[in-house]
Length: 159
Length: 85
Image (cartoon, rainbow over all chains, first blue to last red; front, top):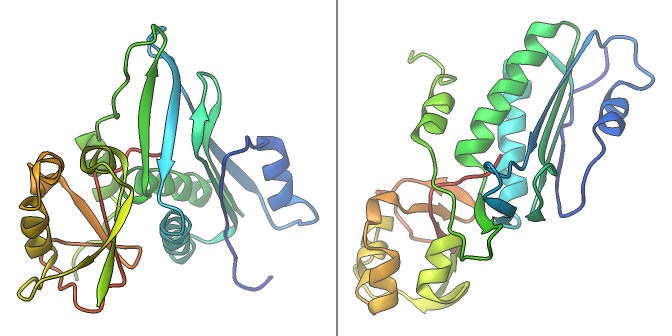
C-alpha cells in the first residue's frame, strides 16, 4: 500500500488528453481495479452557440477544487484522483472539465467521480458566458437549482 | 486598512471594474453589511447588487455566508452563483 493519495488538480487554458490522464494514474501500479473518467464538453445548444467562455477566480479555483478533492479522498478508498478544469473560450465539442478517479473496485471510483462533479458545479469558482453563433450578444449562464440539490445529496447525515 | 474587493462575471461587468481597494467605514462588520454599503455607492453598484441574496462571497478565497464577520479579511470576492463543470 502506498502513502496518502495526492490529488492532481490543474486549472488550464489548454486542452487535455483523457487517455494520457488515465495512464498517469494507473501506470506502473497493480492495485487499481477501476478507473472512472467523466468529461464535460461544450454543447452548441441546437446550433445557438459558437462558444462558451469560462471565467475563473485564479487561486481560489485551485484551492476550492483541492478542498473538494481532499474530501473525496477522505470519503472513498481512492488510489488516485485527477481534476482538470479549463478556462477561456471553448468551442462546441471541446473539453471543459475532466475528473478521473482510480480505486480497487468500481463503486468507490463511480461514487467519488459523481460527488466531485456535483461539488465542482456548485462550489468551484467558474462562470460560463455564452457566445452566440449569430453574432448577437451572449449572456451569462444561469446557475441551476438542480445542481445545488445534486450537491446537497452528498451531505453527511447530521450526527 | 484597505480591503481588496474582487468581482467576477456579471457582478464585475455591472460594477465596471475587476477589483478595487476600499477603506471600509466603521460599523461594517459582516458580509451583509458590506453588501448594503457597496450598494449605496452608485448606480453601477445598485445594478450589480440589486438582489444581494443571490450574491456569493468568498473571504481570503474561501466561501462564506452573508452573516460572516469580515474583520481581518485581506481579499473579499463577490460573484454570482457558480456555473463551472
